[in-house]
Length: 168
Image (cartoon, rainbow, N blue to C red; front, side, top):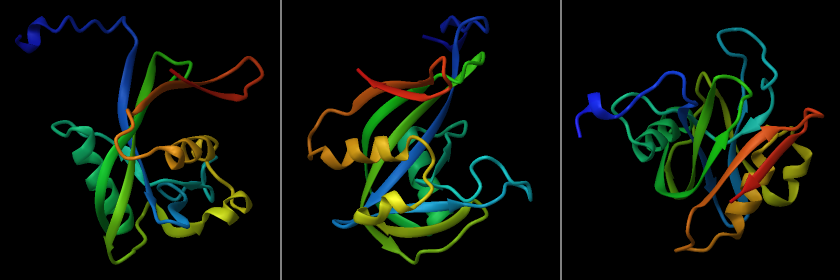
């Protein structure tokens, strides 16, 4: 089917594709302490998140995850899709978040303009200021076994402005 027949309608709900990667060791996860963006502090500055970012035109989510992991941490790894979350931003455009697990990481860990990567012990993760949904996704990913079907879900803020993540 040609692209002209894809029935793209700008009045329909749209999403921006992004990737999020959790590199795991038996006792730790690789997270990035986020730095100010373009010299400006944001609500995320100083918080910890998995490496990740936008899927660029011409990329599939796996390629984007490999690129983002290398750009933000200096590492390469074996990646597997763990799940997809639709992030309802309460705006016209939302986010389609493809979440990957990274194992067998290799390379030399390096900081980037995005932030400073750190291996964080699972038993100490509660002591770190995490991006709001990181603990939710990380708990789910750690329970997954090889061959499990990737999860699906959506996240949104409820009427009291509390993050809610619902899995399908």
